[in-house]
Length: 342
Length: 277
Image (tube, rainbow over all chains, first blue to last red; front, side):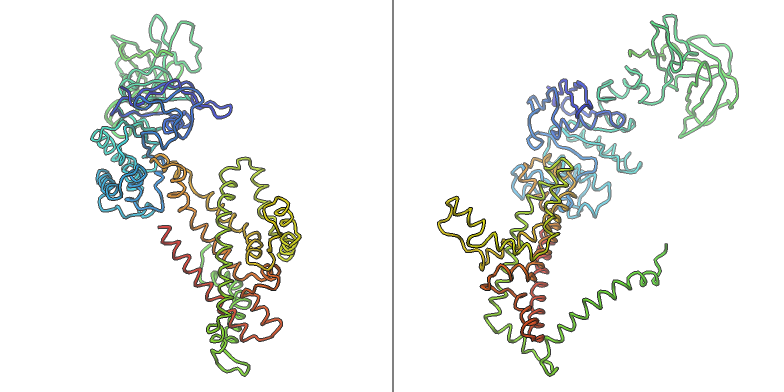
């Protein structure tokens, strides 16, 4: 049975609709990311689940129980806040023991459970620190320990890594995922960072303008985006117009009025082959002129002016036998053209 | 701009000289006067007279009891008021109006306000009229000339200071702390007790210290509302300086008040620091 079931939830603030009829199910032990640009409603959704906001319409069930009307302190879940929200007047130990103490656990037991949780996140020996005396990474771990000490069935994380620098963020992503697998709590992780979502999640929920665009594994979302927004938001994408007769690489949908009955297809840059060979056997092809070539991190991006726009191709390696200004041919194999529904 | 020692010295020269001329020097003059007799010889006789006389201890007791009670009542009354202003009054214009109403009494003279209370609290004043009219008491209650009367006047005058300091402290509490507390299973009362109150405690303590210091040094309100029945230390000091012209004994009284006040404030900040941890 699902640990969390959100049914047709809408939320408006005055005349602004922050969430529009959102439904989502999360299974026990699952790692689900809510991914989207800022203002897409992902944090609003998280706050509705936590109970800090009340939905205008719809219901929320946790572990088979309707919690829509329950205040936050009566819901069987915990939250890691974006700014950690560690109590500044308490030590790490007191912060982590806060949950058990409020749940009526005896002082000594609360202490040992707090120490255990601090050990789990790698903060042994730092239990007497105050938040202001600790680094960002340590505060992040303490906030995590505080949220898991009560062993909730569901943990909500609101962009918990956004304040950390890149190196630490990468390390915490892996640690967080390992911890989640070890303790078996379902995580709902809000982020605007697609790489972060891809690294950690079992399922990614892509949101835009208050609605869910697509739910799927990282792979599914990348390979088979259902909407143009998803295709654009995740990774880089080339869009073409497809008609019953095939994919027209010369026709990019921006600045081009597609005829009725035609649809839009996405082709990922790594599936665009750049060649100087004039003869092309299968798939679709078009001639163009290389505009720029740039290499980052072992991947080279080649921007080619072709048809009515720019087509981006990527290939592994930093050395390519092509120069800017050169005429080339671009080829896309038939199976790499993904037609999007909407 | 670089802050060279010369610039720093230039910037603080004015306040330092002001402070020295109008605060430090008079204080030293008072201190010296308190330690000398009419012939200019060193003596501790004035302090001995104060400390070995039950009359002075009684006055000190009344003064500090009024100080503590005023502070306590102010804090207890100011908390809900500040809470309302900061947390409940959402409409900005209304909140501003409330703040102005709280602060407004500070724009009138102390003397006028104390006379106002003399009229309200008198035997045939409005408050007694109400109490008798409502059948709450049979005969008019005596307020003037009692500590209760003085207490009412002092609380009324000093309440705005505490409302403002506590309100300021409350406004600074990040709501995410309270959210975190609720998320960890604490109800509203528990959250207030464990999180909100400790976080506003430094603000409450600074407000309380302010009120305490102003109460134990208050002259006008106690003098007008005492009806000649009660004496607090500032009244005694004023008497010595203005009627008896005994600057030595008066000075000793002033220094005694200062020392006791500082001791109380030191104790309070020690307690609050331990409580805040």
